[in-house]
Length: 184
Length: 347
Image (tube, rainbow over all chains, first blue to last red; front, side):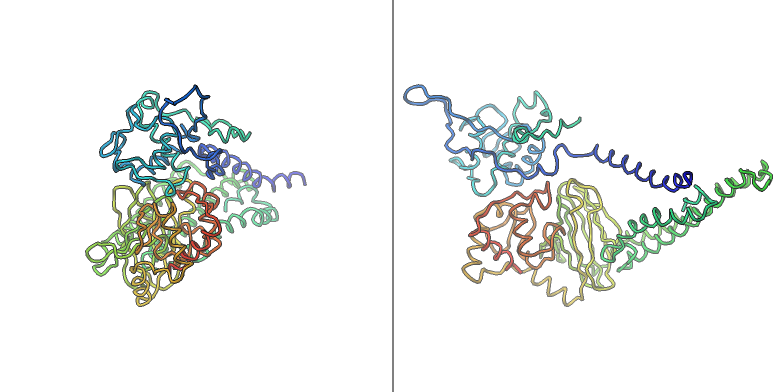
């Protein structure tokens, strides 16, 4: 009887075992981030408007104002999306591939309207004189940040250091979830 | 099939296994044969040839498998020496290997190869002169469909739904704007890849009217599984009416609510990616919405096209299809409802 039970269960056991192996194989192919993380909320604290473009201020010394940082800085998924948006929304039409044409180059360290993330955000959203269109209301905040993440990769420091290390976005870190460092 | 090898002597146990293991596997395997996306239910001469080839290969392979299993079982049975038969001598073994391992494959494999190649030759032949030309462009993760006239100008642009006339050959020009996709309508044709920087051609003639599901058949990223489309084969006069309507620009908003909806569309992020012909919306990176309401599905076959799904898709596309290229856009109710009504009016 025992013998018979064993024989009857054997194929099922083999199936279950191969299923487990299959799952293990598939688990190795997962993307850097989980499927729930594609629902990106805009960064907390609103969006940067009225970011100062220079450090000079009238009057006495003021405490340093908090600056907005790109929540997707160095996020490879965001960089890839930003590169796609760069062409979709015709940034390349004026700035070419970063070297500049009708618009100024974005791969040097000269920034007419400030070099902080929030200055870039404001330039894209508000537009700038002599031709930079105001994209505010036409693309979402997340898309603006993705484009900025891509712009940062055009700069010499990026070329020097190469692709960023895989890094979790701050919001994911703060929320206490620790999905574990992606294996590379 | 090879279950018998475990325990040939106990038929009760074997029957139990058939019920528990083999049947569910077959149910899983053939669950896909439901009709609308089914290569064994051919609706065109091209698919008929492929189905014939498939059945022929399936039968040949099954017969060979059975023969091998019989040989194996015989070997197992005899090796136990229950009948006291002498093993094959050297000469007999050699002849068995020569017949089964050399002569039989040398006959069967060329037959299979020749029938396969000759069918491929017919499938890849030039399409007839009177073929309707449809350009299919694979995008992550949807299908751009462009109907071309004799001068190869696009006369109508739609997405994720291809209408074709019954009985007239249709030539598909297959392209990709990003990664490799594959065009597959199992009821109508075999697979053909869409490769960036290259135009592949496939053609078919639908024999009967019907709606057939097609699916991207080359892994193309996170939403590959939700990159489907429908092929609607219909009588030629129905098709002509459909194409004439599809060529026309979008209907003008007929009342203030629809006008408000159009205004919402044109002043929000939709407009940078989507186009509605007849308005200022000319985006070309996302599906053309000129006749959105006439389509059966949303998001490339992911959802049935109705008001509720449309609202969910606009407000939280990353929930419906995580990783897709559509960003979530927040609308308050006063903007959303006119927008939905406007999009639903785009017949």
